[in-house]
Length: 485
View 1 (cartoon, rainbow, N blue to C red):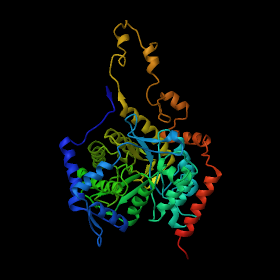
View 2: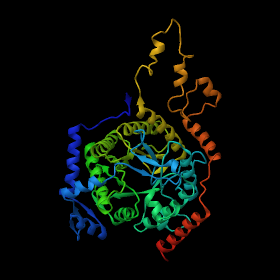
View 3: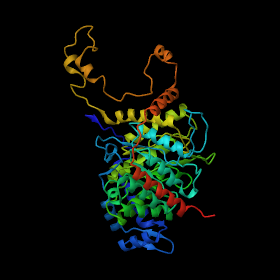
View 4: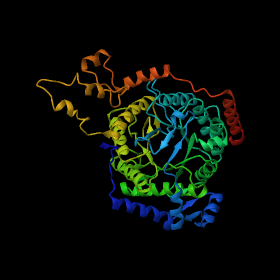
């Protein structure tokens, strides 16, 4: 049976080489953190900690023991249980998420104006995510702080999302103390802190910048999330040629080591904390110094990292599975989105991220999100593979096929012609029919579907009590975190 298709970019020996080097980086070279409480926890667990500099080296035994604690099966819950995300995927496929951090909103479906995304557009974006069957969870965009303090951008953005989603999502705090408020808001929706621990409707992204260095904000995200039972999606954001080696293998190694350090610290703080390894790789253009994401060498680095975590450690992994360096929805973006999604899916990623993004993740676009929804549907069909046996080839009919006989009226055809993903906006029309429908290209058809979806949004009916709780938390955050003039 040719099912659950996979591509192995690393040989068995290369996979073991990468595992050895990841361990060496964390036990021989070490890494730096900024967080006194976590330093103390690591020290008590047996790590070598230099408190004056924050330098940490894990012992080989501590590394191995913490790695054993990482759960290989878990569920990222959703406000509506029908949208729960099980890991590993029950069908051997993948989950998907939207682009995080996208700050610009070139919405061609409205007036085409290119601008910083606003809160009402976050609400619209979230309702669209909730409507698309192949977009499984959300991440917070970078909202323009109009009408509220800069320090609480993430908190107001999450409030806008909470009121418009039934799906799981990850939160990305922009300040060290903000994680507490975000967790408190999620707990209000979940029904309390214990309910949130039982069914975590959010997960937290934490990052490493610069390489193998974890600033206080990200360490506090790990610390507070682990205490609250909130899963982690530890993220590395290296740029090949800038702060890590330029080669595919070099960037994959450093990114994987950075992610692994966060995963292991999470297990030492709270054994059994669910983690989705999230290396998001970039490359510096050596002619312009611009950050890019869609070169083939970067894609190969992502594939290496996915295989390393999924096959090498048995840990679910997540990277960009769509995205482009193009600033618009053109042929370049189409090729790069398709190439990346196919390669990362076949490399075994548990999550394909970055849906709806353009311009190296700086911009998010609802029409691109609708296109990506269809791309994901097609890639899922490819990833699932196909069965090859007598029934699949219709041997019963082939063996007795008469002259000039066709298959239009065969029971086998009737049984199977509905198989596979049926795209919503990709055209399979003849030219005559295409012209009759207005000679519309892919973007125009996405615009039409966007309007249909907007007209049929199903509201997220949070109770009045929950909404009041959330609004009270946001109001308190503004007061306590906003700068006092």
